[in-house]
Amino acid sequence: MDYQKSAHAVYLCTYHVVIVTKYRKKCISNETGDFMKEHCAYLLNRQGGSLISAETDSDHMHLLMELPPSVAPAGMVKILKTQLSKECHTRFSEHLSQYLYGDKTPLWSSSYFLATTGSTVMEKVKDYIN
Image (cartoon, rainbow, N blue to C red):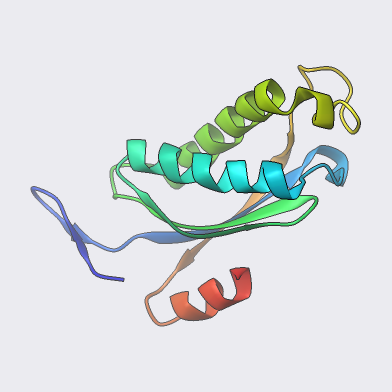
């Protein structure tokens, strides 16, 4: 990873995020997982960040993301969880209805894991996610 530049800062802020489905329901299929990765990249890009690596399992998602210092990591996680839940309920309602009751049930648990990564550790985190 190279350092990023803005008008008044040079930075490299990377984060490892893990979010889990509500009640750890195994509702993430290959199709929904692929959509989630693409949509996360789109949402991060809109905030000036980028998705370095992502992987989904049937009940959770790992993200390695880069954000500018002006974006709060907790706020970005909130955006990701909210928007992914809305879009997945819209696009995959028939699939999700097998696991979650009603289209208003949140897809994600209210908790999440967030850790900063240093440039020396980032390759190990990226390997772990992949």
